[in-house]
Length: 240
Image (tube, rainbow, N blue to C red; front, side, top):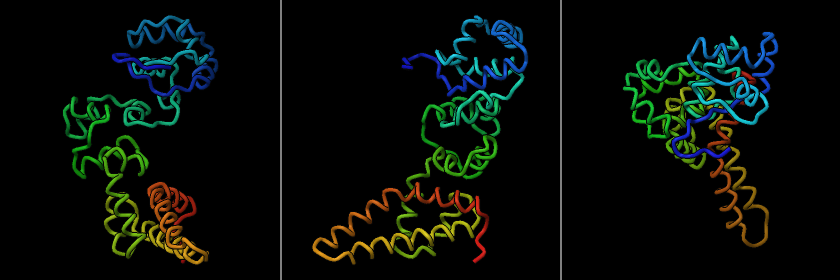
């Protein structure tokens, strides 16, 4: 679906969930449309509700909130996996004004964030944002504009002394020291082994091969960090 300038933003929509929830309530698309009009003042044709369920079109953010109300469910149940700040907020049914108030921002300043504006808040506001929207750590770091700073820290950690970066990385990502320490040590060891391995392949071009391998490893350092953090959170704290 193409989005044109001025067209309402449309969040990801789980058409199958909408149909399943409606049928479980014994409702028809006409009942749903009536409920949206009665409770939210949105006049939606039953054919539009049917079109959403068929995946032929998707509701706007306002329509999705009203649809969730008519189906007696949370907006998150009608959404796909959130990708943007706006989608995380919609999933929880939080109004822009309410979130802006909690952050200590005016509405327009917060709306600029959802439009892709640069984060200018402080650490307290970042913590409030993460808690209010239940953001996973990678999303919070990304939405608060810290990806570049984290990548620089990780690059330095694997190429120099990783121990010096446990505290600053832990503070930036708000994760337990032990988990950050384990992941940084693992990444450092993998990077060094990768470099040593390419140098020991023998033949010409060993240094060039090592350089290419090192750059490839560093290019993916951010994703590798979060993947290993997630893996350790699933297996629990280290017992070593």
